[in-house]
Every structure is written in C-alpha cells, then in structure tokens.
Length: 217
Image 1: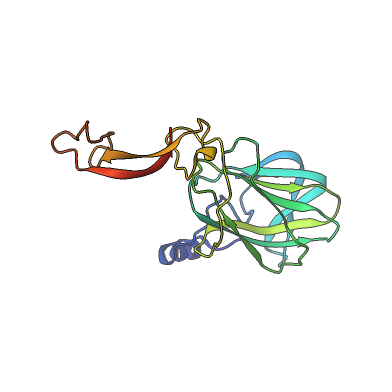
Image 2: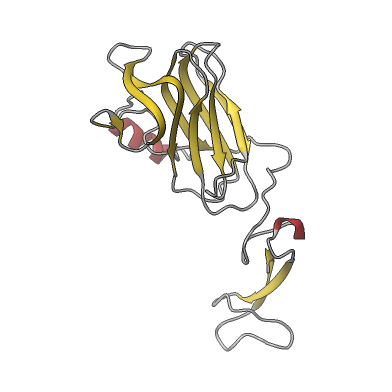
C-alpha cells in the first residue's frame, strides 16, 4: 500500500511509531521482484489491493518465503499492522527470529480478512542484537498483502519472550539466558565505561564508579 513520502516524513516527525521494516507497503519493485524483500522460496507478483491503483504483493502457489532484516535491535515492544486479503484455506505466517540465527521465536498466522486492518503485539526479549522478519505461505489459496508494518509500541504487557544463548556483554536477567551460564552485575567508570570496583578505582576524570546492569560473562 503506497503512502506519499511527504506524509510519511511528516508523520515520523510527529509521532514515535514509524515503520521499522523496509517497504512495509510492498511498493518498491525491481522488475518482477521486491527490492527490499528477499524471495527465498516460491513466486510472487504485483497485484491490486483494496484499490485497483494501489498494488501489493501476491504470494503465488503453495510455498512462498519472503525475508528481510530490519535494522533494529532491542526495541522492547513490537507491533505488527497487517492489511491483506487471505483466503481461509491459505496458511500465511509472519515470523521473527531475534538473533538472525535461523530459529524463529515468534510465529503468528495471519487470519483471513479482506483488507480489514489487523494488529498484534510482540513482547520482545529483554536483549537481542538482530531481527530476521519472514513472511511464509505454506498452502494453496489466494493471498495478497497490501501492508505489513513492523513498529514499536508501549502497549505490551506480561513477560518478555525468553531468549537464551546470549553472548558475553548481553543484558541478562538470569544465568540460563547466557551461553556461558554466568550472569552478573558489574561496576563501570561513568565516563569511560572501564571496569572498576573497590580495589580498582577509576582514573582521574573517568569516574565515578557506578553500578551497571547484569550482563552475560
């Protein structure tokens, strides 16, 4: 779904919730492929949406996989906004992989809806350093997406998604989240971020020595 660039720019200046993914409206085509989405499997084509002159992407055939890696990390609450025309028989999922390592922590089926806006929240892990976004179709049936926007929100409640195998230096709440099995708070010099403690004080001009949240060791 195409939104005028000027309107997008003005909106992003006036509110915090700008799209975090590239080309959420499936507007930018490089020939018969989307410029900002990688087609990993299957076939796609440009298709009209709720208006004949507004084009989205049709997922053609029983198996289609589109992926991209938005340039985001550690946004605490994510919101999906979807506008699509999907037959009840068509199984179309959106997935999030919070390390970009091939394991999706979020997998949600996009419900059947004829251009009715749909949204849902993802209470993201307390730490992550990459995101892989995937649209996956796994059965026959008509499926056209006009918009799939990933944005930030403040409406998440409950417990964040668990995410283990975190590297040294990553935020952690307990040792099970760390690849090393060690999660502990530390102290750093406020000006230089160098490690410090009672026996190793900060150099002149580097302090004071302050508490730092727990990280994986």
